[in-house]
Image (cartoon, rainbow, N blue to C red):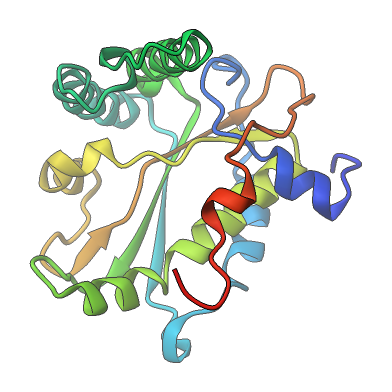
Length: 216
């Protein structure tokens, strides 16, 4: 069943869902496929359509991927870039950082329990490539991934775009039989029904601070 959302509501309320993922409710494969049918309508450079989608529901594989994600998260959580390790003296901003840190920590602990994990992949590799080559390569995958997230939201599913497991991409490839030398993983997307569907637009920077008309 699709939610009654306008286009603007869908675009402004598709959140990174972590604590509100329903870990106990199975996601039908047919529903994931329905979202992917929409996802692959996204643009693809030269119409190459080099994307592949690995849908993971096996409990053992999910646990293994969850452990890889947890290991990568532990390193991230110990770094200066982790929101929980930052304090700017602004009470409201610091509270937001701590909330994000707590949410991210929760997902790291529960990733292997999410009922469906999706790994979007693309044929080829661009390791050590130039910025222009890398941007061109990933732009043929990422629009489709976001289309999947939007389609999932419209059907009562929550997602979160994560990339930490790529620190152990080869190990993840071994778990799933992905040919590492020929195919690149772009993300790890947990997919689950959400606990409630009442998501709201998030606070964002004022456009006047970030929009540059006619030049920087």
